[in-house]
Image (tube, rainbow, N blue to C red; front, top):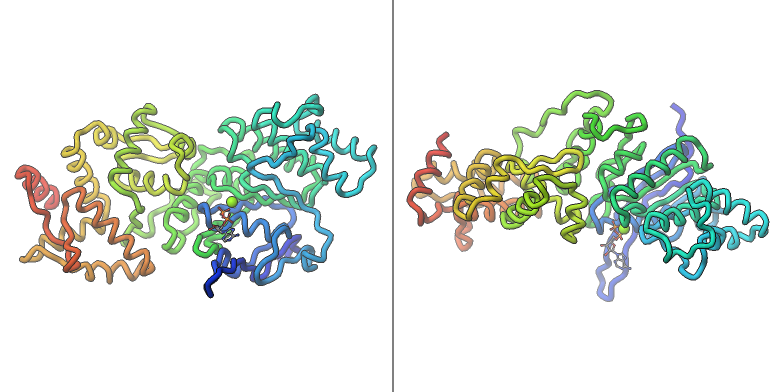
Amino acid sequence: MLMQEAIIRAERVEKYYAQPSENRIQVISPTDLSIVPGEIVALLGPSGSGKSTLMRMMTGLSEPSAGQVYWHEKPIAMADVNVSIVFQSFALFPWLTVFENVEAPLKARGMEPADRRKRANKILDTVGLDGFQAAYPKELSGGMRQRVGFARALVVEPEVLFMDEPFSALDVLTAENLRSELLELWQKKTIPTQAIFIVTHNIEEAVLLADRIIVLGRNPGHIRTDFKVSLVHPRDRKASAFTQLVDYIYKVLTQPDAKPPELPQTTTGRPVRDQRQMHYQMLPHARPGGIAGLLEILLDHSGKDDIYRLADDLAFEIDDLLPIVDAAQLLGFLKVNEGDAAITETGTEYANSEILRQKELFRIAAVENVLLLRQIVRAIEAKSDRTVPEEFFHDMLDEQFSEDETIRQLETAINWGRYAELFDFDASRRRFIQTEKLHHETEVETAAEIDA
Ligand code: ADP
Ligand code: MG
């Protein structure tokens, strides 16, 4: 197979920031990454993982602390680079009209006024801004402002179009509309752009648009997976291949320390089997109180809502909401489908119950769905002194998770176990112990459930 020549190629690029002390903050660990003609690449990752930093180095806007970026195999600092960037914040000049904003980059490149006018008007027409030439940005809606952002980026006919969360500041419908228009321009080759690189933390957006998806992990930023998406356009969000891929990426993002799960076979409708059945699930780092809060809000929103909209409504970072959603899903309190979280029957009962009944429902769900909690309960039951050292589980988890993650997993298990009154933890002896029972009925039920 012929290797396609990269337009931009990053070789072992790193970014770190100097500190007053000896230590430096490493933001990106040594990374190789190429952008080749003909592809839309989506870069996904939790916030703070270094997506913007990596993107800026690929554009030549920011110099790597180590390593090198090449533009057509020439060091990028010395090359005649032709890229544009669209920002989430639109970054328009408020004192310039729409037309002047779009014309500005051509002026900066020294193009003659007549040519500038022709090019600017053509692109304004292409992105649906004809008639808005004389308007000022503040007179426009967010969606129209971002159209200006696109027009300004496209007017220079960039070889690579970079976008940093371009749709994140827009409402769902406006974002959907702009996304499909952009895709149409790209597919019909209305724009001469050779490659598109989009930074996003919206999983569905990545799966809707991209030919290739890269997922970054954090501390420091590194590539966790990089794979091609072969679904045909227009992509159907309801197709099983689509939802499988969304689920897969969702898993990769919510299990930052586990090995990425196997990729689904995106071209067939075959359901993916859980290959990790015999292993520990990764417990999302969420508190029972947060899970209860989420379920109550969902119930308020007639039982179903888009996760991203929910995060927005709650002024949550999506990365902070995802573990809570994941935990509720693991416990069977809600189901996620196409980015919508829908509360289940048990979830509804849980949200509607008073505290003791909530604990009971949580206990049943936890023992049923969470291997680690089940094992801790069984181990305590099996011991005559009704205590088990933490170390025992530490060593088993250790096989699968990093040391930090093992500790976090145990912390979460202790938190859930205490809340559900499944067991208690004696921190001075580092041992799991039996819960001191205050409610007699509860004790009987617990024993019955665990036997079952
Ligand atoms: P993302 O776009 O994925 O949210 P960024 O690339 O913006 O992430 O930032 C990655 C990390 O780099 C963050 O933890 C941020 O705090 C850190 N960072 C960015 N700029 C600087 C700087 N000038 N000095 C120190 N740390 C920085
Ligand atoms: Mg960013």
